[in-house]
Amino acid sequence: MFYAKLAFQNIRKNKQAFVPFLLSMIFLTALNTLMLMVANDPGLAKLQGAEAITQLFGFGSVIVLIFSVVFATYTETILNKQRKNELGLYNVLGMGKRELYKLTFFEKVINLVTTVVLGITSGVIFSRLAYLIIKKLMGVGGEFKFTLNPSILMITILFIAGVYAWLYLINAFNIFRLCHNKWLIFDEK
Image (cartoon, rainbow, N blue to C red; front, side, top):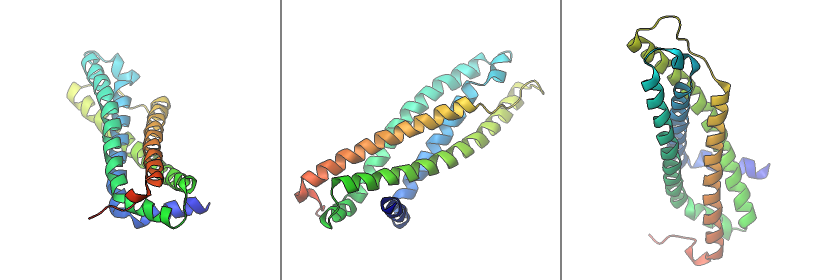
């Protein structure tokens, strides 16, 4: 429980570093939710002339998934550079690799829960908006209804959890490197 409290305090104290990261991950989660929900909607597939929209969103969802991994890795790298001195200080004060692994694990769990809750919620809201726009553009009536597909939400959650697992592995590698190269703990400015 100590590491969870410390992780929460770290996130709160380092708002300038964590807020842009969290906002980008929430945006990517919402975008993935939107693309997957529209691409896999059974009501949209039944409409005449909707094949192009379904294919467009299907292809777009693959591109967004790839972009999400690349962008999340990039933002995590920036976050790690900003936090290198902090983790080095924890190491100098007596925290070993295991403690730093636990600390960053809890930080990732807190970030994951925040990202999933806010990202899925905003993704569902924007999906509803996208349905209304598609409905207006295609001129369809009541036969096209917004349906919330739990399996798509679960796929999105699993994907985002996988991205956070990847980011944790990046953190673990950086901590391993940091603890074995003690002369690289503090950046010279």
